[in-house]
Image: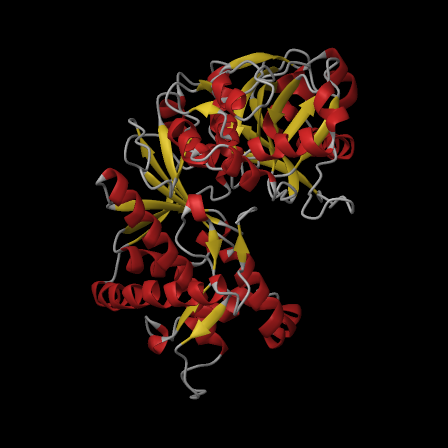
Length: 520
């Protein structure tokens, strides 16, 4: 008799197996870091090692079974999540012959070449798929065709990385809308592959795997997988999804006009809609949600979590020593002092990620602006708080961009993932957005979202909405401070103007871009 649900979550930096009970309580978790190495022959490449990474995945499964002390037959169902945009190509015997991670940038030449050959094609494809060439699979497939023709000729099928995990569990090749749509080869409204897109790009139109909606049962653990992992052939395997979409499920953002912000290495705004409207200016990603009949507008901020980590490692040596002596984290120490800095950081701004412009995706050279030579005001705690405020300004820009397309601005947002552990960051976000910020109990939500999908596919829950009512719980709520909201409204307007000037410096070649999409 089953009691548990297992989520396998392949993120950018690690693979995790997470065991939950039916009420959403995490029983145990096992993780292994994995790295995606550049092929020295191809600048910008980021290979995904299927053989090695499956071994790491098996290790996490074995550790969960051992730690939990359960029989594998007690696991009712499994679903997989992964980073989006990464792809795997297979030959006619379903052997992996090419794979890359989401940040692979080897195809820098293919986008411009295709746009020159077929003027207006990127905008045309965006109107169908909701995606540009920035992170999609089209230019990567063109790269394979042009640079590894022997692999291209052997290619019979393509899947995303969560589909690859499902394949390793079941032996069945499949796809699903929430991650499949990030290829740029999906009809976003019909939630199916659009073969015409690949034909327009002179690519094979028949490499798609069958589409299962997230939460649909695909099969069971195969005999081969059972022998390798110790899992039971009685355990159902259910279609999972992309990390951000399953994260939205894991925090209960599953209904019309709900909004979530996921604060990690990148910050993602996810805004639900039942009627996907394509942005005429091609600035936003439009994705299939992991909930059938639901879509999401998505805007991505580059590196807020990584910027904070950089600042910690570069400037917080004193706090690191205290942390080693007392166990009080660097972040907790810095936050205590940053709370004393007034909203707006005495007029100081910083620039890292820009508000998203998907069709011309690039970011200015990183900088801090407007600080003075007054050590009482402008010290490392002020700079620390300015980084927090910067991430919130970007999120406000993203919500305003979504409002421009939809006419809707939220009254509240769910804030989850690592950055939501900071009470100060939560309050700054509430003040900058001028909305209520709600933080769920389970903040690392992607794995819980995958477990919910597993339970829906196995009949544990009637549907996703019912599952969320049962397992998703809120921990804290932050109301906006009216005085701070006024300060931030003024600072946000100044930030938009300052960022525009900083981006112009990078565009002119005076300074380097922090990041820009391949081919720009």
